[in-house]
Image (cartoon, rainbow, N blue to C red; front, side, top):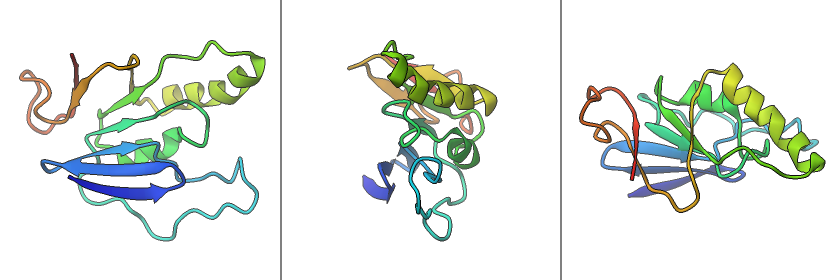
Length: 135
């Protein structure tokens, strides 16, 4: 297994020839004055098979970056919509809207649940299709 830090809170994990990105964020400038994204691109041929966002604050959920990086149709595993106070909702609703606007295959994942992602996750999926199977 190979683990690579992508900046801020982001990680890329590779195992068995497939990759997963966690909290991949390209641009934090809306949140932090003076933020400079990494120079160059970390993306390689054949995008990640899936993404995981740990929570829907903008510094952990960047739908534009995910849409550019992921294999088309790859699942974006995400927590359930928040039911926080007004302050929390103000910070999570933009991420909710971005996931929909970028037409990402967002799937709510419950706490402590297990998902298999990638080409081998579902026997019904063709080998080039990323998918998620829950257990």
